Length: 412
Image: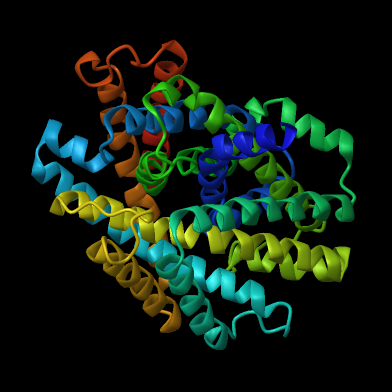
């Protein structure tokens, strides 16, 4: 009985945990590393206030998926027209492709840390990494892929162990986590820009498409709709706590020793490299293991979310649970998406600059999609008695406001 309850609990929270893990992709880890290196632990509190926003938006998307049994872009097309849906898909694929390229480079560079001090000699690792990802996605069914991603996300515990090894000042960490630094937020331009960047990129378009389709891959029943928030909550609490560990590890080493990684092409890898002389080889390797795990989860989610969105436009929706024979177009798009990201990575086509512009586009696209989601989730004709409550509406609208501010500041 106990084993059955544990299994049921894992299956319930699995989509939320996977989505939360995919949110902490290698590019995101770079952002958190920069935060820790520049401001120590003083931005940890931002992770706590972002939790209700993430839960509100992602649980709303998940509930829409369970109730409608439709993809997000399919609903947007039906409500707002094909032109809007096409624009969303084009921006999504563009952003996802460059992010896949950047994440492939970061993942391969992290693997390279175990073999050499030259963390940018990644060409020999990129090819087997690409082939491994194609194999996992194309030749394994959804249940196996979901299990691989779920258990892989637990590797993020390596960040917690890293923090133990770097010996941060616990009192300072607690202050940075539970006491908002409003003075710097309002009067320190660099602090404010980094803070809005962190909050503005917490919710990404690919997570919205992935979450909604994942609920259908799980074959959630209609009765499960009211439990979606609980299922999502566990994943994003775990995700944001791990983010606090990432910032803390960078703060206890880079910030403490006044080491600047802003000029580095790979800030996350630079953090792992710097940990070696400052905190020992084990701390460096554990941090790198976390980046590798993040890449192996986020890259498939990015590619699959692109395929979900595009196949919805073609009216030939594909699912991982159907397999290659029944969803050939779906799998072809996934492989093409991985191949495009791989090409940017292997030829080093200015991926970092492209990633910046893709994040700007993400910052513009995400609040627009979230507004659509809020409207859909409050429509009784679509949702019946499962429309949004005050919690979901308040924090979803708050997330839109913050993302819009972040986008404006990035442009400035």
